[in-house]
Length: 283
Ligand code: GLU
Image 1 (tube, rainbow, N blue to C red):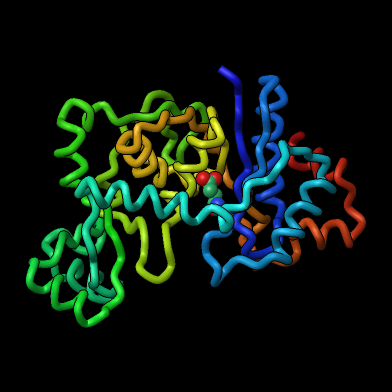
Image 2 (spheres, helix red, strand yellow):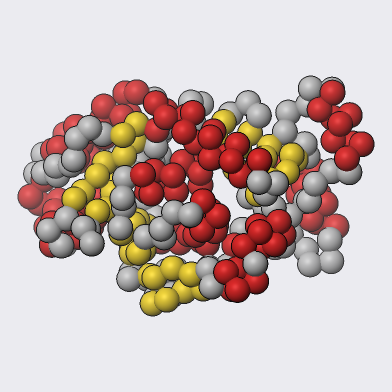
């Protein structure tokens, strides 16, 4: 099997040290395995992504000394592909329309016996109500019904949902891990106005691009559970996962895009060399 991995940033800000660590981890893994390193621009959210940040990503990663396979896939150029996945799941009866606002859902959960920690599973609206809300032109989201997904796969396949973790999750998880999509609830896979959600685009592209190993931060560990379910429903292979620890600053907090002091652009302006940064990050 060819080792293929990717770095998949969203161009919503400048890259910082944490991104450099993640990109270097993935790039080094590909090189050590004699495989391929892909850069993918995850810009499906037009309200948060900006072209100038995309240009800066290419510049920053080049400065860091990384190279990647061409052409670079930009998700905003493939929205129809993700919509087709949503349409397929919908045609198979696995999605339902949800007209509830975020606040309505949180309020409802707050009243529920298990309290706010319970995953969001609002369930379909009664048929008459749905027809009325549709006729009113109200905005809705398409949610993946875990109940219908489970019925569609059957108990044996549902219980076999799993992924191999070669890195480590936030609670020390590693090895063969049982996927538990129920912890995510009935996730939103598309919105009437904003198109498909991250889980759809990321699983579609990992399959399309033959990604064998997903190397990414442990903040996305939980997302893996629902992504494994989508892969299985779509008949796509589940890659091996290598979640890595998140870098933190001296105050113990993880880096965020708003932390200007640690952006690669600022480090560069301060005279830090790529060699020095690589060494500091352990590469
Ligand atoms: N685009 C996602 C982000 O910037 C990462 C997706 C992934 O690595 O699966 O957080």
